[in-house]
Length: 125
Length: 111
Image 1 (tube, rainbow over the protein chains, first blue to last red):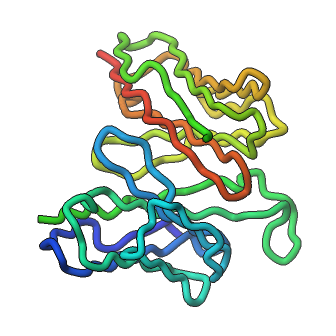
Image 2: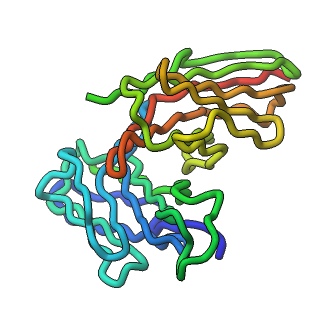
């Protein structure tokens, strides 16, 4: 496994169009996070999944945003009726959550450590 | 409201110098703290993770410390190199479900 991957890397769209981004986490990771980052700022948390359950959503995530992780593996983030203010880098991260690894194995020193993908840069014209 | 602050916003040092980056946070009841580097237009690369119960972590030329009582963490970089030039971000997990990033320190190491 080579890390977190995101697709596409770049997306240019016109205002009002819908866009969908995909994130493939590190395979053994049970948590998946979405962040948004604008120029000169740190990433802002949007939402996260524990397996297939969406457990937390930021108030930044308006009704036009929806995220899914149907089988607890890859995730999609959809933005409907895009606005110019949606232009940003959308980052995905994953982590192995919990005191023990899968199947009750030994504690991993990197548990709860977030690993990020390369991001999807969205430009709304 | 939890906040994470990084000072300075930008730092320029000559090659070989040791340096310290600062991160402060408003709530001492944190879950963990993670340092990242970000190259222009790229994603984030994890450098060090400090759990709430730990005081410091080391990896190569990097050392990160955590002082929860004062709400501070520092990232120490020894013998800086031009390849260390990047933006360094501090991320604090205040609970199981709250994640906040600072705005970063942009580091330039001059050859």
